[in-house]
Length: 209
Image (cartoon, rainbow, N blue to C red):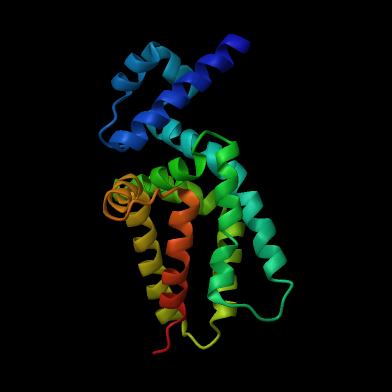
């Protein structure tokens, strides 16, 4: 059993690194098995297919992230009033705690999530929205509570644009960090990236028409 678990973890670790570097679409099972030094039968035994492996890789982070996000959102909603900045701030600690799951876990999770959307991984979006619907609905309700004057259609578009901004930032996080260092001499980690992003997103969602 220990050997099987070790093999499964090795496949996930290699797959995660390749997915982050090349994207989901451009990473084949053959490249994963070659780098992990396992055969295809091992992947099929532990995961069944590539879609299941993709979900397993991301869910390793989601299982840690979503319960923590639910806690911070629940605590926020004990208050009668709060701002969009405070809503987005509920994401910070759950994200940064992912560094305990894996080295540079927050950055890796953000990058993988961005890859999931830019690579048009519909099954991955379905998996997240169905498995974690309670937390996602709580986040949406929190946004609505912070912006009671926005009609549902306007709120839909603003959340869509928020997601687009996050996806671009997530999928380009490594390049953005290199640009920031080369242009301004500043090292950008997950915390810095998030703190730059939150005021922009909060202002956009809460903007008056």
